[in-house]
Length: 515
Image (cartoon, rainbow, N blue to C red; front, side, top):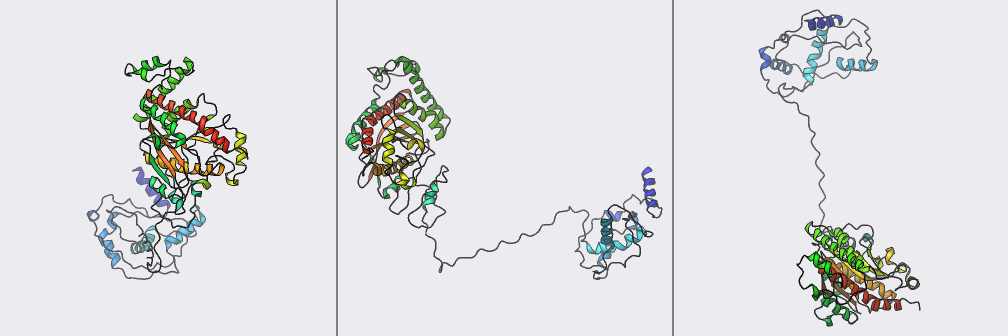
């Protein structure tokens, strides 16, 4: 009751007639679902301008539902209304009222007596019915969608006047590295103009592609000692014997620790133990045995956890190289995975295209006291300006004045051996290009290479001649999966280092001496 009294007071304050609230009962005619009909396209002319001016927004009188026509009858009346054009000179009262209200903000200014509410409703209602679409009160409102404009048709090339592109990959696409190399590999350019292809983006990863190089790489397999070059034949025999029998690879004085670690599973241990001491103390031997045991355990972890190549390099391969250079003055090892081959040394093929120039993973170098740095710098001063800063195929700082004596490429278990052979071959070709400029052409020294796939280590030999480069698959050294294999690989690395001291170092030092 209080709500009705308040509503009547508001109506009286607005100047309207006092009347009771509308009947809350809904007539039966409003409960019928109206039928859909198209909206009329006619407009009614606006009523004549009112002589009353009011800045106050009028309040509508709530009419009783019984006084309003049912939906179907109201729509029918709108359809039967005569068609008139809306006058452009006289704006509608609603638009005029909104403009005046916007100008004065919230202020109420009444110039004359306000018109009756029912008169305003009666004047505006026909206009609203004729200018709005008929809305179904029972229908769910949905936003209107604009039709998307059709895309312009692409022009059809004329095959008779425009030749089809030749599907020949460019050098930048041919050398796009799968590991994410970007800036420096993009500088490798072809010496002849070629059309790019969007389908050929993988780098050269097959040995057969290296057989069309300017100096082709010919793969070979060593089954006898005569298959190895003359300067490394003795080295080949020694490593072959170690890999087959592993005789004497366990130092004398550590066999007790090795037997305890094997827990009785290692038979004929005496065949693997050396007959003479190697000059190390028992504490040094124990530290070395702990390192070998850790390498074996990390190998097992990398296998069972399916770790990728960087984890193998960190946990297994680099730890073995660390033990190998320990106690060998002049020898150092570096992880050079992120370094690059100098563009001028990247080999090319018969089509004038440059081959992929990615570096290998590890390099063992030789420096003072075996190779004095001053001799290397003096020899580099006579080299071409682009190549006078390094003795190796890369300008990476540790490689500038210390020649690489052992090149190592590592692969993950699913990397494939052929990809590793290609990597070693391209590196050997670039290294031979550098040594030809520094020392002699062709290079008379064979380069030892290592390919590590998973836990298995293999020895390759690269030999340069006047017309070709031979890549020889020499010896399957062993695996780091067991303790005997770890000691075998360590002993093979020390045999290689001894050959470097006796053969490679004198040859290199004699070649870089100032004239």
